[in-house]
Image (cartoon, rainbow, N blue to C red; front, side):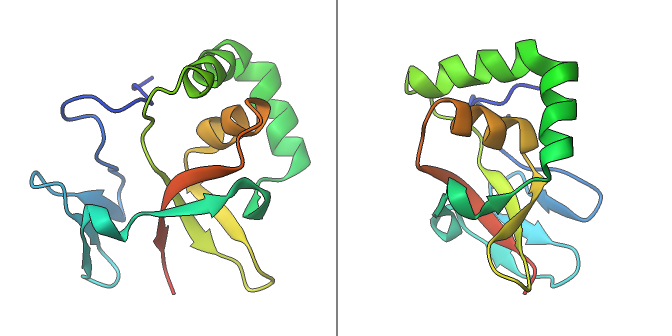
Length: 119
């Protein structure tokens, strides 16, 4: 399990399809488009969709981790941005950061810092 809060090199998203370079620029493998930190946006949590059964599963399995993140949100700790993909019906699917989105909702936050991928 990696850290979810920002520290030295841990604030770069990395997966098979999309990643951050050493310089902190986001590179989408599909579009080859680079994004700067300025391309992050604040998204209303009400627009971040995670299926109810997935939320229940993650809470049952990883409650301690989610609770620790909730406390960090409430303490004002700067967290790693989540990665979202737009939905045809509106809102966003969570590509990376389901635990952080759930923790932010439990902390009664209204917005979360995110990177939007895909078009």
